Length: 212
Image (cartoon, rainbow, N blue to C red):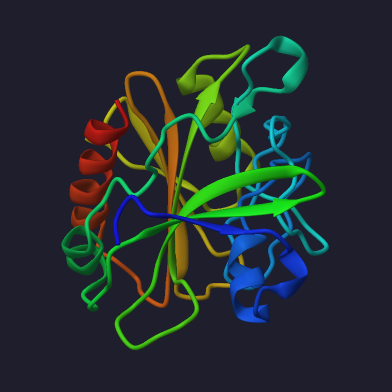
């Protein structure tokens, strides 16, 4: 159900398919390498507030920072990250999605939360939203870093305060939309579909409005 937080105390207990999705946007480090089904990272934007999500050989998306010492991005800044409805995600992808779930992963005494979406009939998530605050740089500067350090990224006009679409580096049908709103930098990751730009704009504006 939307808004519900599921707490997972041991990342090792998670099914492999969920771990793959969870390991996606956890740490934006210097260069971008991608795990199947995961958004990549922008150089110089690294999450440090709650770095405990299960991670494989890589880390990804920005997660804002509250203090200068904590890094540019810090996550878990809104109570409910499920800012799009199942109908919104379904309209974006052309496939039937269920309501998103806020999933909290706890490991080594630390935890992080994302909203995950699954297609009707599937188990593995193929959609995700994370919301961040930005510290030490503007939202537009954060977007510029994403665009600069992500091959084939594209700025999308007409979304919030700015947006960058980050395609999969291997050409797989998945992509990440980074959206700047008034106060937050959000990411919307979608797999198993190739939405048209007009659909990204519609979903991106809904995300920007609700993120605030």
